[in-house]
Length: 416
Image (cartoon, rainbow, N blue to C red; front, side, top):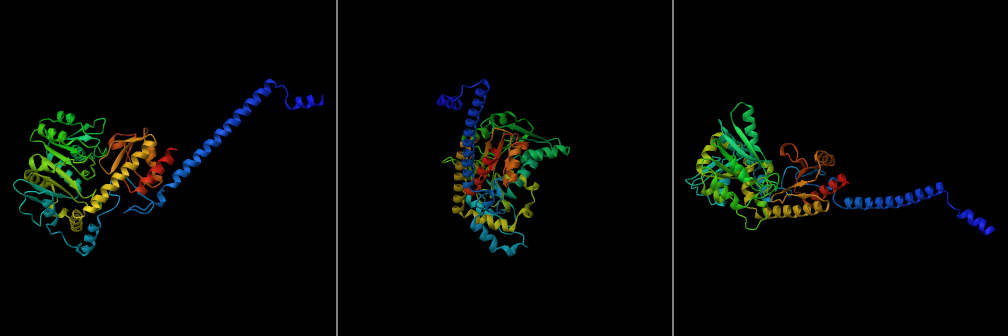
């Protein structure tokens, strides 16, 4: 009896209330176990984040420590050592205007232009077949091209989204009362130019069409023969601008650039810069190669000799001769892009295939808040909304591996 008494006390028949209580307890215990597992998983995730570089630990070239600046498509490894040395050797020339012809002469040789005479006191040079013009980066050259094409009542065509300088000038002229028209043709879903749409947009008033190849902000690349066919089908009076500021980062083996086409056609100009692979973004040097008629048409809109920065010229000439720095810049970008794409894929995100020193990434949600949160961590990237009309995207410049890891860690932390 005693045994049964104690047995009943220890294992009584459950009442309805007791059954509910037991189920609640068991559910709570299971939830606690899952909760502990979730906490442990979060701890592991946090540990993984902290194992990589954090923004305060990063020292980028040309920025304060702790700032991960991936918003402006700058060269992550800095300028060519030869360019830096050239500037140091001529630092006491700051009070002098540039009078050399070194850069023009070097570019004429590099691109094998048929220009027999290069003046040291000019910002351009032209022979019977070929011409070249210097600018304060390619942005000044785009400004000249827009003014020459639009004034007094012209029409231009540009992809959307894009760098947009041609369109910005057109919009400003229109606001000032000039009867100009800067058309925008949307990109294809794959992030490439819609060349058929651009060709169909040409009217009797169209004077200029611009193609950025590789493209900014998507980083995509058009096939060489696609652009050649486009030029073949454009009226000869329409100037085709091919912006190749990111051409050195193209990963397609044997890809042909468009300088040879600019040397053959009277309605093609190719733009290049020293800001990207050469790492001279702050020095502001760009140039264009085209037929002499195009160069002469642009000249009246330029600042001419006053646009030339003495130290920039020395830096650019030296950078041209530093093939090792070009190789290192390319490899840093290619390795960085591969790392970023792989990490983003593990997070469920994708980017356009990039032939530039940046990625346009789809985060599948509005990125305005994410970009602000990254900025609060001193990780600077560009939101895809606003001027680009891609609200679920961010554009991230390729950094050093430390900078790339810090970006990925910050992004994981925010999205977690």
